Length: 573
Image (cartoon, rainbow, N blue to C red; front, top):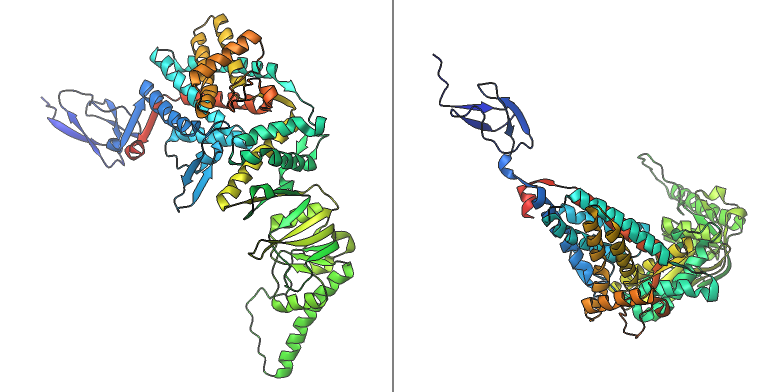
């Protein structure tokens, strides 16, 4: 008679842990398998040996959904208060103590140290809206957070997550359809570009620079139209350079039809203004060539040294001769040159600029119609860039100087010079100008506008509610939830403006329903007019449609996750 031992240990191959088997049961009681080794007990029953079982935590089913949704909601709550014309700014302090003050949703989320894996999806969502549209980065996260909040109630009712996601997608198509229906097409050139000026003003209205929004909107519109190809409806943002300089007032921000380079002439006695400039744009250094290999030079007599010195001088003279023969009266060099070369250039009355960055060099070449030349021997008159005037600007009492290249032969490249009281204001103004530029670019691509002030969301809410009443499947519940979620935007706008959120939203819904005009929104500025067309508060149709579609896709992705396996450390974080 063979007796089974009272207990035995089965060790998985390669596993550092053992599993004790009881003699009362042939199958061991193990935790749910995740990752491990397959083993067999003495009766031939297979089981799995877990590796680092005690270090892993797991969320399944409804708990996983709720944990994910709560993490995403907390991100949306963080930036909800920065929405709208009266929205608050956020101060983000970096790990090195650097401080950032901003109102831009994408920048806030990008600089926040987000640990949770689902919350990072909302950060990516905001970034994709910023990359694709450039504006509406706060609203998209608020909408996604509200959709997830509504999803919790539906999950508690026992509706399957995929049915919720399907209902959301149906509702999203209805909402986008309604947005496109209420959109109005504007003539971007009519009345001195009034339509796109108002749209750029709306983008700037919620920022730090809102007090100067009319002036900055004009600058942005002029800059974008200067580089736009209207036949192809395309704008190349690489040709718009935004340069900041601390000091001065925000009102001193200006648009320069040319290039600004944060450099000065290499010799203090060179002329400060060069008219009818013919530029040699060089990527080769003003110095004798150096051998690539290790070398040793023995100079034993004064004559040898004099020969070497004369040889060096001859190199410099030849280089300057090539520039002069090409007809250039200004040299712009990517590399530096030593004092000897600098002195020779000054003697030859040839102004020069050194250490110009590669990006600026390319912009100068584009603007002046010149060619970047890698060797002095290749310089020809056809490769020179031409500009009406190159002058040195001096700022305040700090003796800081910048070069301005104006009246270029190809005026496609422009520069916006931003001034401000401190670095934070200048950086924030740059971000605001980027948003406004993107808004103008979107209207050149697609000249349809939709109302701001939460009017678009309220119109979409009413349309989705009407569609959900006609829906006969269980998706009608998630469509109603989608409609309720869109109310988060007008409520956030009213709340941030110090108004009653529910009262304002109810009033806007009532006005839209009774008048049949979907352009009535929340009067954040308390002007007494709720029609957003009269208030000139509108944005590009493409931006709003993109917000709805991208937010719905990310929410669907989060709802499809029902099992989260993570290390214990990750869970605690």
